Length: 304
Ligand SMILES: [Zn+2]
Image: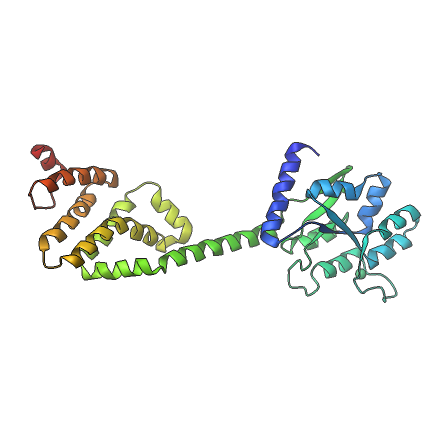
């Protein structure tokens, strides 16, 4: 197997392992058609499967498919002997007078309850395109077939991809909720409400961020209208973390609350990047006893 394909398959199987808990040895249901095809072309199917799936393999055959091999018109005794060494999947159809078709039998083995889950985590190797089409609708069924003497692992089916995306989105949402619901954030919000300047902080920070470049786009991807909240909460955390503590400790002094307001008021006037520069200038000012806030950047230039 060439390097590029091997890498692709390794990635694929890794995804099946993470998302659907596939483990070695991989249980591979082989239908009679792929056994006949590979026997004809003298392909060592099980050996190739180890390479394609990148691990140990447990080949399996259903009772029905075993019967298909016995009923085959030119009966291949060699192939039957070989198939007998595989683990027999007891599908329970052996009592029927005629075996089920590979399609019916394998579909029932993979998803016995019809609930759309690959209950036993089978890999299915089949030469029948109808079987592969049917199994693509069930998430998490790796499908193998042979084309021109090459053993091929199909890319993930749409159903599998969709389920994976759904799960990842759910995990992501859980993560956000966990952060939002964190006690710290709520406590800080309450403290802010006590402060008079709290509302100003909130609105200003949102306004400043909406002017930003990349941030609002990321928010939209996450949740649309609710997107801005987590980041608008995060930013003021640093400022408010200092602010409210001072406010609690020394509530009666109005001068300190003014100081906390100053940088934010400037932030609305200027962009976020400029706001940082202003903050630095403000620090210089703090050494001087000038109390008034809301100074425009031009005035700063004059004073310095
Ligand atoms: Zn069966």
